[in-house]
Image (cartoon, rainbow, N blue to C red; front, side):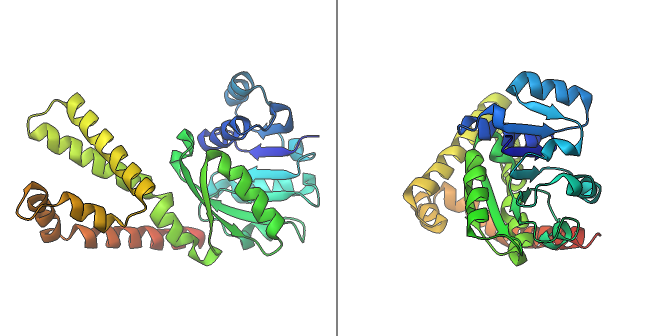
Length: 267
């Protein structure tokens, strides 16, 4: 019996698929629903899993991942609903799509768990947040957490905070990439080659993130440890303060939260 179906064979769908296989799920217990013929061939050859082009491929699954574009979700749910097992757990990774939206289009009582992942799932370093639906219990949440744990870390938050989660961790990798890009560009302007500037910045960011993770110290503590009074770091941080970089981050992430709310409302 197929245990897990993944609806959507794009980049994130394949990331979840690969993570599940790495975690020990047999390819024989997985099926992917994907309509693009070229992706069907790629996924079959790359992962050795069954790939179908129609919703009836989920009929034997007890867990169904929805990894589709938000604008496609309504049509996908209409196609899926007649084929889902009554006790199947539906795990949605679609940004901005509420549990109520999904439950309204499935059979009454269908358990749904909403997940907000982020792109470091591609390298096994996802930060995923799960929220329960109206019909999901502890066992459903535990199953979703265990499965998403194959691509990174998982925490729980109520759905009311999912727009904030989207702004912090869902969009968060882009903020980090923007900072890294800016640091590399600055290094080049200061005379470094692009290759050396990239190596210096990427390793510095990796090292700093590792320190945060392994020491458990608040970032302000680690920042002060690097900052000697009147030194080079203090001179740089003074510029950030004068430019209100902290405030800019708050405003940017508030804008991301607000946009998430608009998208959820169909805006």
